[in-house]
Image 1: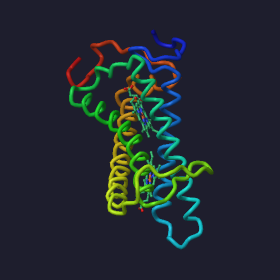
Image 2 (image 1 turned 60 degrees about the vertical axis):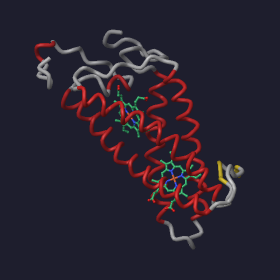
Image 3 (image 1 turned 90 degrees about the vertical axis):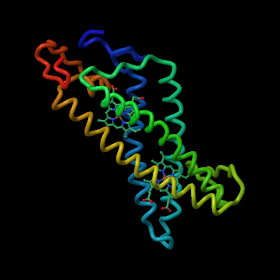
Image 4 (image 1 turned 180 degrees about the vertical axis):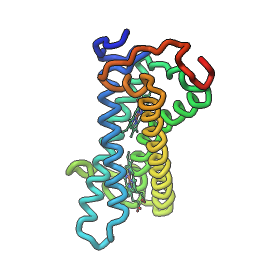
Length: 203
Ligand code: HEM
Ligand code: HEM
């Protein structure tokens, strides 16, 4: 597992494998795209003819993300998960873990909830040209509450992404550890000599 070792398909206890990396970066880019599409869609004038297409794109991409995230969760639960680096203090580890699990909760919960909300509104759910049937009966009060939760969840997701990206960049450029690299095919940095690490716990 040393530096520069060939990337494996599966995860190891120190490195994310190729499959998990592919999930991470594909979903990461699509989630950011989906947020931009969502903000665009939510801001469109209801009389604008582009509304239907914006909604179809947002719903289709969102349901695709649901499927991808479920596949990723399945893969993660069946693979070793690399331990967080010891350059993180205990509270930083807890924050990182909570953020990672909340990503799963939100990227699965937002599209599922939206599916319920759109059904409760009495509308079919578009999926790349198909129309998926509703999963709950018409109930406008339910639709209102769930869409409200969708908006709040989307804003929590945005805040977490900002935190997550800032943390990744801090690891790469300030702490200069392997946290970002082990999620990429880039060669790992040599482990620094322990005495040269002025880490928070004087490691
Ligand atoms: C990972 C998946 C998803 C993400 C990250 C996401 C994100 C967002 C964002 C950022 C907004 C704008 C919030 C605002 O400014 O009000 C939004 C709005 C909305 N989304 Fe999603 N969404 C996802 C999946 C879905 C799906 C699958 C559907 C439909 C089946 C959907 C239906 C809606 C609707 C109807 C609104 C408009 C709410 C309003 O009227 O303001 N979303 N979404
Ligand atoms: C585009 C900028 C992004 C960068 C630079 C980035 C960077 C990273 C890095 C370096 C890790 C590895 C942490 C570790 O080894 O423990 C990681 C893990 C993770 N990232 Fe990101 N990330 C980005 C976007 C996203 C987005 C948008 C999501 C939302 C779905 C996300 C979800 C996750 C999750 C859930 C993990 C935990 C490991 C897993 O189960 O996949 N990342 N990220």
